[in-house]
Length: 160
View 1 (tube, helix red, strand yellow):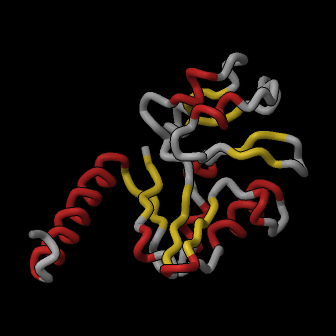
View 2 (cartoon, rainbow, N blue to C red):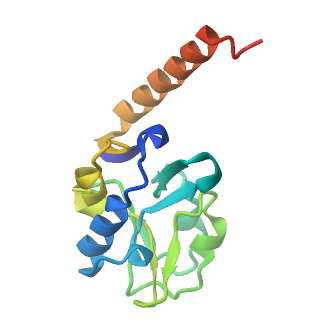
View 3 (cartoon, rainbow, N blue to C red):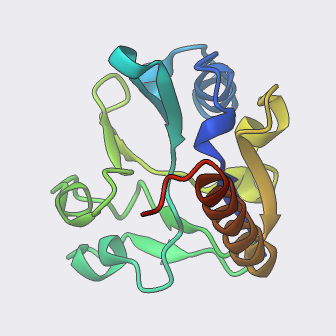
């Protein structure tokens, strides 16, 4: 089962991921209807895609009174059943990362469903800021990236 690995330092704020996501799910290029959102900090020119982390112990699943959020057995993604959802927005309230949003046009809650196992955002990301990887590989990759950042910091004298 895959998971999306986000590498913020690679993000160029092109927003291709938002457009691909909204088109894949809603058949229109509208970033407000996307399940991935690029957050940009203009003052320091950094940006990062933000997408559901598919938490093991997902607070959104636990908080949903209608039990409308379940785990897809094929992909491992936590998905919303639009027919069961009562739109109480408790999932929005409890997500510590703000990854569940409300689509005011479609009148429904949105969260990443990994595109049924073929995440379009990862396919179109030109810089590799979003990649689709095996869950175990994601953990290993994160550790390697953190170690590399620490190594660079130590070489630059950043740790004292």
